[in-house]
Amino acid sequence: MLRFALDPREDRAEPDAIGDAEVHIASSIRAIGREEWDACFEGQVERYDCLIAIEESGLQGFEWRYVAVYESGRLMAAMPAFLCVYLLDTTLREGTLRRVVRSIRAGFPAFLTLPLACLGSPCTETCTIGFHPEVSPDRKALLFLQLLAAFEEMAKAEGCAMIGVKDVPLPLSATLGEPLSALGYASIEGLATASLDVDFTTIDDYLSRLSASTRKDLRRKLRSEAHVSVELRTQIDDLLPEIMTLYRATRARSEWQFEELTESYFTGMLEHLDGRAVCVCYRMEGRLLAVNLLVHDGRTLVDKFFCMDGQDGRRHNLYFLSWVANLRFCLDHGMRRYQSGQAYHENKVRLGSRLTPNLMYFRHRNPVLQALLRLVSPLFSLDESLDGKT
Image (cartoon, rainbow, N blue to C red):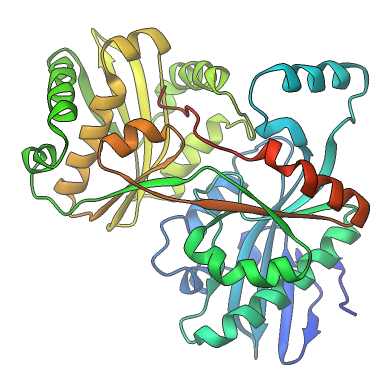
């Protein structure tokens, strides 16, 4: 039996001894440290600095956890995690069923709400387990199971009935899916992640690879560039009121809403990822019409959030202007991959992106409720939708 107890003095869980391994669970990533954490997430854009920006952004309704497996005092495997009260209808499409659920919840607020403990982050693109470079492939499954066992014990101690693993990309799902399924976890489809290889040398070269109709349409839309000014900012304090107005309007247009970002999220990303984050501002006649928050590691550019004025942004084709501007940014800085995030797949595929499927895993501690949730889970699967670039 695993032992678990949070030590508030050290902001770290007491170790759970599993063979030669010890599992610690911290409520701040600062208890682990940047060097150790990033060593396990080599090649990942959203590492320590990104997670500390999320942790300190003041997102309402979330508690943060960081699960770490140590051997002989060295960090060998790690994952971020969070606790929240989850509304099961979050991923339901707008329609009769969702309206019925909302009407019931108006009288019974706890209807279809569950305390959730989830591996992953609500604000990163995908869920990744980090391993020390010396961990051999055949040991990764065992380390993950040790990490998961401690996390499940913590979830029980925290009173979380539901345990989840959020947005596991298909390549990783092939590794983690079997042990998760063996432990009774069910899976549902999440939103795929779109990415584009920047293996061209100029924008004209990129355009030549698109279909004739897409190329013609994109060239027509790019005529709006003559009327729009573009500014790259690493400090946005003076723009925060305008940015948050655009963000809230964009969020209100979104069909699915999970976390609500704060001013500190935007400023924190720029501050903590110093030199690896930029906010691109799009103006017309001095008026701020759109902003695009980007992060990178020098190799991959990740589009974190794009928000814009719904009417004028569409009229001036700012989504497409931002797309090409981001590709130019990749070319100017030698980046080889542009990751444009989840959803709005139709345009992204048309513009040359490939999609990597993501899966979400879940298990309720009550086997009867788990069987019921497994039965109705297709209703909650995510499919194509419009995201912030609408």
